[in-house]
Amino acid sequence: MKVVLTEHMARRWGTAIRRAAPRAKLITPSLAPDGSVAWSADPAGADLVLLSQDLWEDLEARAKLIGAFFRIEGVRWLHTFSAGVDAPPFKTMAERGAVITNSSGASAPAIAQYVLAQMLARVVPLDAWRDQQRRREWRQFTSDEKRGELTGLTCGIVGTGAIGGEVARLAKAAGMRTVGIRRSSRRTRDIDEQLQPAQLPRLLRQSDFVVLACPLTPETEGLIGERELRAMKPTATLVNIARGKVVDEPALVRALRDGAIAHAVLDVFWWEPLPDDSPLWDMDNVTITPHNAGPSPLNAGRVMAIVLENIARYAAGKPLRNTVVFDG
Image (tube, rainbow, N blue to C red):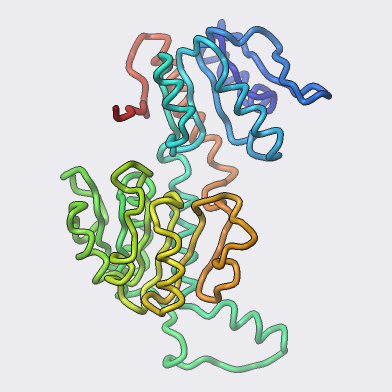
């Protein structure tokens, strides 16, 4: 079994991979001084290409290595550390005959805790207390000045898969009411009111926090536009941990400027990195994070549990977990 992976992953997980597949041959890339990619052996016909997060550290190296991974001929199976596979090269690989599997669910705890932290930051005056500390100022906020807790507020979640489901669990633990949208009719645990996509306006009207956790598809691109933003409460906060293109960004800027909604927490954007001239940078009612909600030192272990189980399935000729099916 030929397994293509980075040197870092080979050092950290090579023993476990060989335990799952005793005859596995690990093939790693390296960057030559001229910027070209060299391989420790011919990667063509690889049984498994492991596209891991340690490619993300240096932008220039990342681009070269990702390009090299996607150009390998005859790949039978590609696994990505990400959950999203909306980038065109994934579909191209599938069209060339590769099975694509993703890491859906592996980063759900980290992303859900990010969402919970951002929601808490909207009701607990953490920044104000920090500013007072810097000024050595002792002033207690009254209950009229701070809500102090999430209890009784409504968390609306668009997309209640692994990430959205974990958001719902944490929201319920914080005493919130949860409303969720899911294409499937199957009920999601920890959702008080489950809706279908056509019922999005119902979710928007009642939610204090609208959390976008859906995949980017032709149906969800531009899902939150002018009409949807104006349907939200003027006191509501939009939290986007899905994909930037799920939201009409210019419409969001207008809604924030007009006070149609109170705040937006954005971890994803139309263009990344977010351009210097984006008006979002200078808006006091926007919280920006650099597509960074998901990374956690615990993610690799969760991802590799999926990969190692799938290696055993691959060897036995069984269907793989987390297989991605592309429309069209």
